[in-house]
View: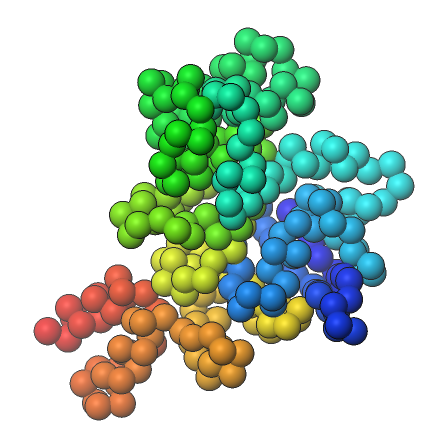
Amino acid sequence: MIEFENVSYGYEDNKKVLESITFKIEDGDFVGIIGHTGSGKSTLIQMMNGLLKPDSGTIRFRGENIFGNGYNLRELKFRVGVVFQYPDYQLFETTVIKDVMYGPMNMGMTQNEAMDAAKQALSLVGISEDKFNKSPFELSGGEKKKVSIAGILAMNPEVLVLDEPVAGLEPEGRRNLLKLLEKIRNENHITIVMVSHSMENVADYCNHVLVMNEGKLELNGTPEEVFRQADKLEKMGLSSTVAYYIMRELEKRGIVHDDRSITMKEAYGCLEKLL
């Protein structure tokens, strides 16, 4: 679905923000992008729908070069929707329903069509009808995030890209939002790309992980392939998951012979069999 081939971008203190990035995202993937602040994650996702143009290399969406002659970048922004980390930067209308209607109206929908699309999207993310005519700035942090996601979903995108979607939320709010993203992926058949600092969230929900470090793509694979390379992650100042370290320690002590579980669910399963 999305392909980066030798993509490089910009210079910061004589250093590239992104350097020779190559990877593919398949239709239906739930991709987690991890890395320290300044590693290039946010720049990377802004290139997925053409918000930023690389200095070199090629970005393709469904096989087509998005910066090729005649390519419709405006349409791409409807097909690949980006939700930024801070919803206050993305919300601007006087009411929730107007805010979510903005994208569909911009696509060319009639007011009635945009209203229907907005109501469906808000219902999907769990925003009740009694909040439709409230100012989005009166909502809680978690509700604002849901409204900003609904604003993208109302345009019926093929890919939903989120920058730190659960940052600043309480534990229950984080779980609920991640379950919502999983539901959207499964029921609406939308490919999801999520920037995250939580190794546990990525291991629990994603099927594909990209690890950025100083503008380079250091690791690219399944959660199992990535999080079992704890030594490499630690050299980048990152870590594997808590479950991985617990099971590794139990294995060192001869208590378990595990294949290095990376999620708590897997670790519980292994210990349950042992007990």
